[in-house]
Length: 168
Image 1 (cartoon, rainbow, N blue to C red):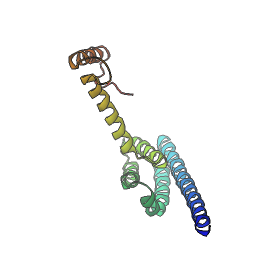
Image 2: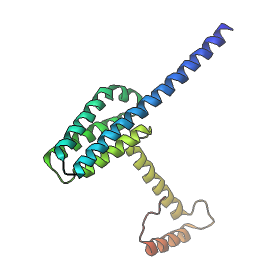
Image 3: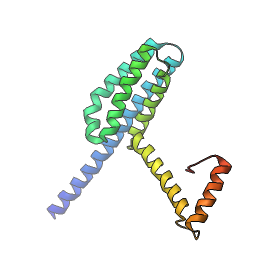
């Protein structure tokens, strides 16, 4: 009886820690996204000094939590956010025209980090889905058409729409 009680308590503790971890990561990503959004607004308003200051403060907050994030999230995603901060700060401070795009990309990476799925993984999954859909259409999988007829239908579709990969 004691073993079952201990196992039940341990299970409840683990569930509680998972919920705390999810809440912490979500809150951290929301705070980072809000800070980067302020930097984006400052950059759009023509105040690169304020944008740089805001990005540096957000980057410092990220650096404090980076070790924890590396333990809990995929390394590629956390490294992409770190590199995104460096690139955004560099382009804002140099007055590069791509500063707004770099800040927007950083915001996307932070949002996908908070969702538990990295941006690169999301893009790779979309490309894989498109490639599989294209392959299924070419070979006629899932329908009664032969390879030649499926290819002819796809070619007509591509000519009509100008889309060579019909995706989601």
